[in-house]
Length: 336
Length: 174
Image 1: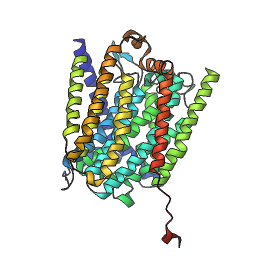
Image 2: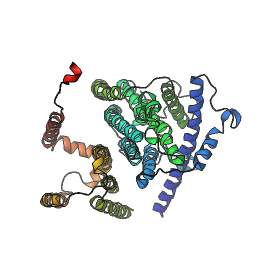
Image 3: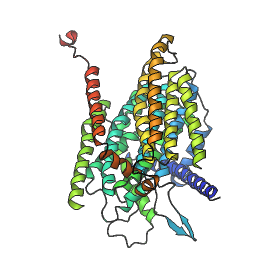
Image 4: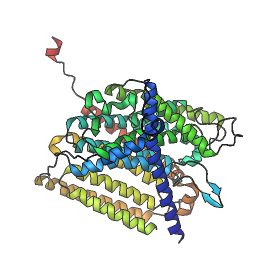
């Protein structure tokens, strides 16, 4: 009976997380389009609803009701599977991301996370890298040249930056002495881990931009060279899933993990703990600021070349991440 | 609960392993290989070995298989082509040897399990990560270092074998 209760609670909680993420991602598209508009000195979406507020819903309806074209010579099974393989792992990272401490409301204890595994951060890394298969299979199954080139570029970028990312998260793990994201937040009550881990933070910023294919690193779908990269042959909702997974859900979830690792998670800002603001609001403010930082970079900078990207990954980011481990080890030896 | 999870994961793992052997299209075989590895990581999770489960996904299901996928998907001759029957002659004895080794390792493991200091009670107390790292960096430090040295040597060898001879293009020079 207790088992059934756990299963029901987990199912409801997962549904809330997934639906919330969908709605959130829909409105993140509006945020991005407005932001891009103002960066480029134009108003952005304006006409659907007050000040373009209902634009995401109109977009979703449009994408869902489009004709679902499948080109003749594609591998049909893999073609469908690839869009899911890019999307599902991105949303599965939510299973290990905590959004706050357990709290009690009307006598019921509510835990704002799905699981609190001992190896949460490793699982987040694992799910993040599984989505690479979606990209590669999308390029292969399309049976066309531009998607193939796009997916190989993306694979080269991802392989380089996964390594640097893996070494960069070692610093906060060493300081907290735990792989659990919740315990990492609890260890930052006095001092945020950004203080000795500044090098790792720089590495992680570059890694997230590369993993989510945002502008300095968006070689996989460089419009001027590759038409649309690996999404060239896709239409309708299958097309919509790729940018939704990459640009919005993955960026949001990875921002949340960065906030947990470096900016104290749901701990309040220093000297502002007396303000009557709930913990998860602090958390979302920080995640929102970091997300806006990525948008800012995306809509400001030009694009790297492919060789520059891989060179940066192996010759700069990996040594920086290793240097960060040394710095943190010395810090721990001095300050305990 | 654990029994249900065990049966689901193990039956799916066996099914996908059968797929690896019998799919004619090599990219579907690799896809089933990925599925097998992820199901095995599910088995580790069901047994409570979360660290091994997570590392199984990161290292085997992603880091290693991704190179198979890259090679297979970039070499167009492989597409949908079956192997030649004459290779069975080589692969049968090698496969049998590997089977013997696996059988020995799993029997030895079943016999030796739960004889060390890390009983299930201790592991639930100190967590998987601490247990694994304690054993790895005390009792098995020497085999661990030897294994990493072998990997380093293999990597340097691969770089040297894979290095292209520097060919000076006479036409480009003139």
